Amino acid sequence: MTGSEVPHSFRLAYVPGVTPSKWVRIWNERLPDVPLTLVAVSPIEACGVLRAGGADAGFVRLPVDRDDLSAIPLYTETTVVVVPKDHLVAAAEEVSTEDLADEIVFHPLDDTLDWEQLPGKPAIERPETTADAIELVAAGVGVLVVPQSLARLHHRKDLTYRPVSDAPASRVALSWPQEETTDLVEEFIGIVRGRTVNSTRGRTPTPPQPKAKRKLPGAGTGGGGGAQRKSGAGKSSGKPAGKNPRGASGGPKGGKGAKGGKGGRPGRRP
Image (tube, rainbow, N blue to C red):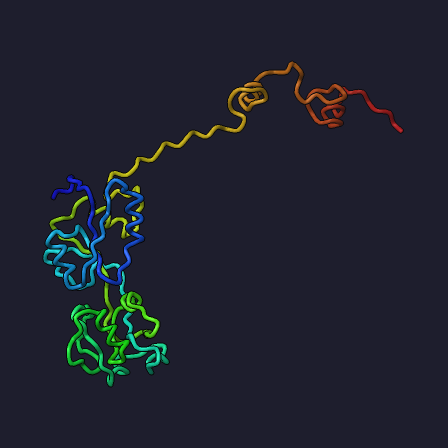
């Protein structure tokens, strides 16, 4: 698909834990003529859906194969351990992987944390999904280390979670096929990155409106305006300027110019 072709809709995939509602709302405000369809996918199948054309772009968890997929990292999540509320870990504000050494730590098949070495003791069998692992934690069988958004997504009244200081973190990114960087993909990238509606990227920006010329105070028609005062300033009133009450023109009142000359009338001596 070329950048000039505009499809009838935009399909956005997202993995569990990601909440795309803010970006969807902005899209609907800016492009009401292009419906956005959400496609929920698991972390394991997210990249395959993008490659197969099942979505135009998607929120995925890194890493992704950069050979054929583009990705823009958006944020990094805190990693937490999910435990029953009466567990010893619940009394701490934060724990380390060493604190979990004696615990059975579940490692579900859809886990995306990049572990160099798994903490704790392995379970006899790996749960298929994070949701399955949460059920086992609630049954008191073991604990689970996950991104914080997944702990919130699977919240239960009998469970709680605490940050794990030295666990690998999960990074969320916007990804799409490199060969399918369409105008609408660029538009969504701009929304996610916070570009304004008049940005030069994406759709053609709205041209700025010319500013109205400001009028000077008193300009225009009507009496007493500045224009009239300006034109009147050059006209003579017919009266000599600077005439004082005694009739002497020019010079200060009572100054030497008035009576200081020799031809003037001498004053009386005392």
